[in-house]
Amino acid sequence: MFKKDNSLFSGVVIHTFDNGKISGKFTYRNGKLYGKWITFDHQGDKVQEGKYLVDERIENYLNKLDFSKSTSLCLTQEGNYDFLELNIDLINLNEKNFDTISNYINNHFFKIYFM
Image (cartoon, rainbow, N blue to C red; front, side, top):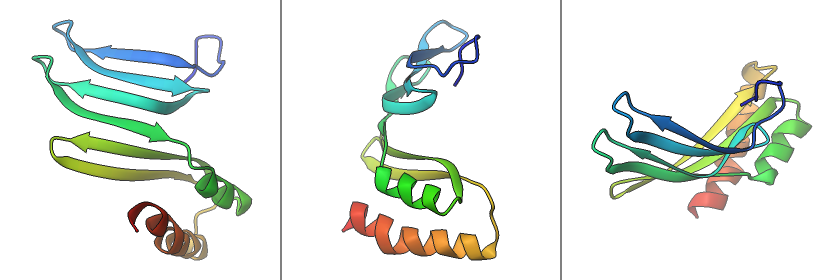
């Protein structure tokens, strides 16, 4: 996310519904989602909350291969359910690169977070 002067934004962004109630609060650091966030329904009740993390192991690996511009890792809770989401902004994507990334995720990422 950028400011009007095209510099990277750091801070909290608050989204609202048409009725003025807050629909979500998100934190950015250096233009990327970072840290805690929360979303609400129209009545103001919490729907989801989570936390964006930086995992340098994943970023360093993908950057070294020149496969990715950026990654984000998000832990999310909705009701009694927990989710882990990994987003990879891929570049130079082809079948070989996709297989390399898939193997890394299956052999390293899942072991780090699910074992």
